[in-house]
Image (cartoon, rainbow, N blue to C red; front, top):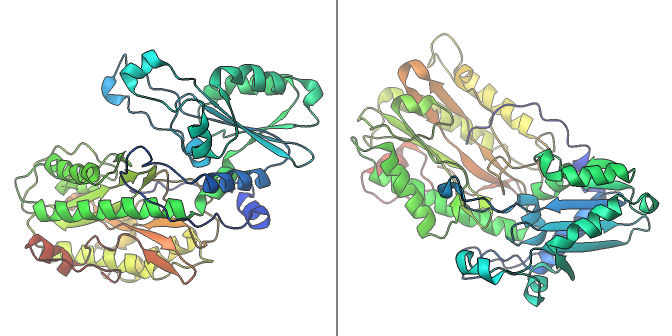
Length: 460
């Protein structure tokens, strides 16, 4: 998915804090990812405990509050009420209980305490919405948190403590993820001000932790990417002139759900002909013509982790000479960048490599200007729980980071847009293209669309 250019601030030295203070890597576990019944989203408690411990080591003494997502009201738009947990809350607890709170107390002595506040069970409501976890041994087993209390106690136990001036020395700072809606945290902020506490953004520390993926995260990302690559292949195989974009969208999202993905990571982009140059086009209503290229930018979300793969192919099954020339330049640009992904590089380094390669190899394909003039979005973004995941873009690459590589050229006057996007894991040795199973060379795409088997690989 195209990354809007932005001048993101350095994340308050979060990356340096991680390097200096982060404990050993999260424990490696054999992680399942896929529909396996009630535990399909379960994260091993020892991994959750490590994540919380790592967060403790990144903050100074104080109280950190992470609020779970609220239930979505159904009285206005029932088709938009699918609950999804807050990413930071799910990262630290692994549970989907709406209306919950996670509170971490770190004292001046360095000792810490974790309290989870969850709504109590309501048999009348569960008759309509299904059984909830509630407070009990199962919740402790899943989260590894021993102290669990009713969500109704949060105000008395946390807000009152924040407002107590005498407790200031023990917990001088309130930490909140401040990137969300300030209205959701108004009561907490007011109580902290009353208790003379400073307020600090917890977001950079959480972003630094989430930037390097542990084994559970990578297992889920790999599965989401595999499902998305399969959907790309199915779309290529099915495409025909006269089809509507939404027909390909239906095939894609059928693959997602039939393979266990809970939802799309973002609205599916199926842009043909003139729509191929619209970066975030997602109406998907146009009837495709024989002369069109179609840009398909899609991502399945599985276990709260999303893929993001873009492929461009001819609706007819065969590239024209002009389409092939532009496509080949984008592909060769992408391959040159992927080959440069390794620990120590930065996203900015990769962006410069992409634009330099595209300028040096335009050879008049875009008229009197270099083709990189028609490459209007950023080359890359972090990938994880969000399609544009959190993290400092000035941070040097290190093993466990996952990012997209997605150059493109968009010639609006010709109705000709090409974008090729892969999901890339940084490894100790260099990189791994997680999305290599999605065809991307001209010969692979045309062969698959003729009905031949695709033997796709990283080099493609």
